[in-house]
Length: 96
Image (cartoon, rainbow, N blue to C red; front, side):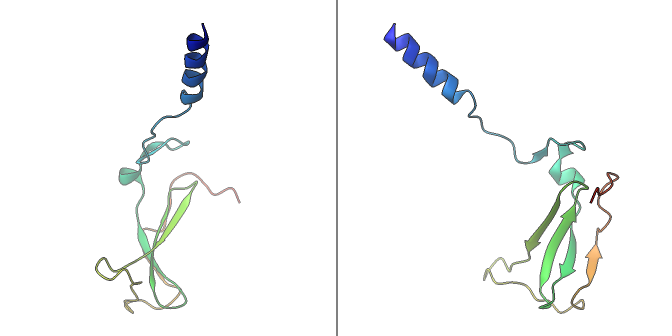
């Protein structure tokens, strides 16, 4: 009897644990992130490149790093404050 109760408690605790797929968006405009998120480049005030994306509900930004050195890429191709590439987001309007 005690083994059954212990097993039942353990099963209940582990029921909430699952491996989720982080490549899929489960919000209003759900779908595969690789297919729907388009990236652009923003140049920060220091003149360094930042990858940016906006899928309508969430926005993403990631420092552009050199794969060999791990240092920030400051290409100087665009002026600081400039954004290039995909900047539209999605058909879902921003609320705020």
